[in-house]
Length: 72
Image (tube, rainbow, N blue to C red; front, side, top):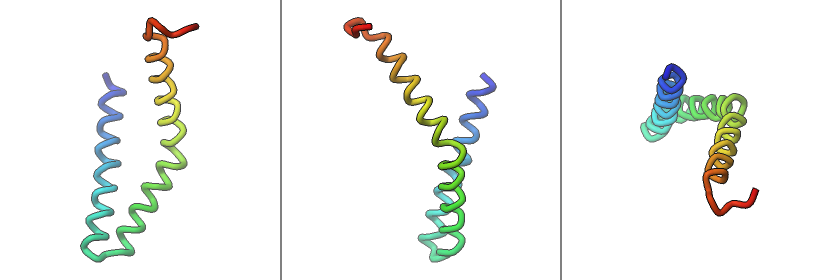
């Protein structure tokens, strides 16, 4: 349960920063908006991307093993 709460809170913060960066761009504060979006993108690429791909693969394997017509 703790991991789920941790993940939800961090996902919310991540999305909040993306939205904040876009709002700054819309308001004309291009430097600040691009900086925030760049940092969020870098964080995703360096920290989260590998874990996201691993989770997608895990879900695919679970789904495939639950399929009664799958050949093992």
